[in-house]
Image (cartoon, rainbow, N blue to C red):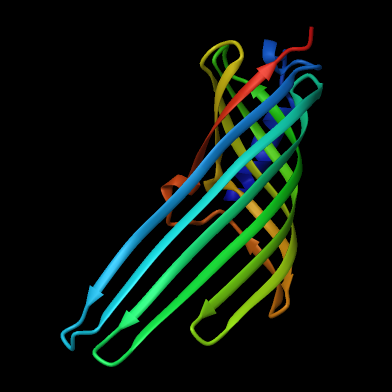
Length: 217
């Protein structure tokens, strides 16, 4: 069903008529967003032992693009991500601390096809390639180790834009309809995976981005 919807959207975009004023050839695009999450937990057991955990993740994103034809844009997206987690388990005669860090950098060339719905609204189909470097490290009182890796992915997802002003836009990637496939390899494992956009996080279904569409003079 998801593939049918994406193919239908692609057909609609290829049949697009006149371009929105900000979707014409020569327009420059800049977009940025940042996502973050964190939590702290403390569990106390009846045997007087305790377990605590703190976790924080931040992922800023910046992208730029150029309209090489009406309703068609080529762009580049950069997404670094940092996630850190600290854990502690303690009891009457023991105490154990550990820390995990995850770092990734993703560079994604992409192409968008737009369809203007009204002076304020447009939809787009976003397809691209993700090139990713990752580093996962773990340390405790006895050892410290790191695992470096890389990956390559192809993906496609629809999205929607809303013009707040003639230049400033709010965009949303509709990740619930996304398709993603690729290969990843690290020092400890490797594999091929396919993701159909299923997630338990509403914020991952609809990512919001601030963007500027600047016409060349």
